[in-house]
Image (tube, rainbow, N blue to C red):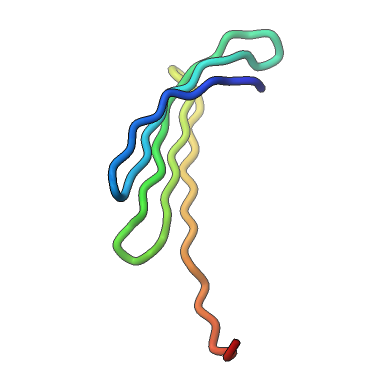
Length: 66
């Protein structure tokens, strides 16, 4: 896939729309990445009129001293 992005942002969120080509078909969509209060990040990514994915990652705490 090849695509271009249009971004908007605030202190805790980045939102985007994208458009490009996937296997010679025009595709587009939108999404956002948000920093949550617990330090996790949630990323939503969607094709217009198609599939959606939501990913969530949280920081791993370690009890080992550095």
